[in-house]
Image (cartoon, rainbow, N blue to C red; front, side, top):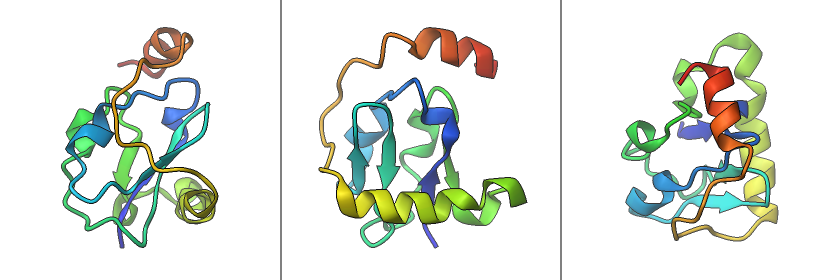
Length: 101
């Protein structure tokens, strides 16, 4: 399996993770990021880069988070690659605080 982006990314869209991805597997829309499971090599370099702990190894997902495997797979097919760091959403600091990070 691969890593997935969970709902912690919503209202944040921090992009530090894309800068360390060796295979450019991140896809994104205006609200959040997703990981293309067909490209992810499961290196884990992105995990410590996410300030809201949104990236998780699919094996470590809780039962109620399993939905994110399919969501990442589906949305990755629809969205463009994100390779460059950009400013997070204006709501990111409040979302980060609400998540306790």
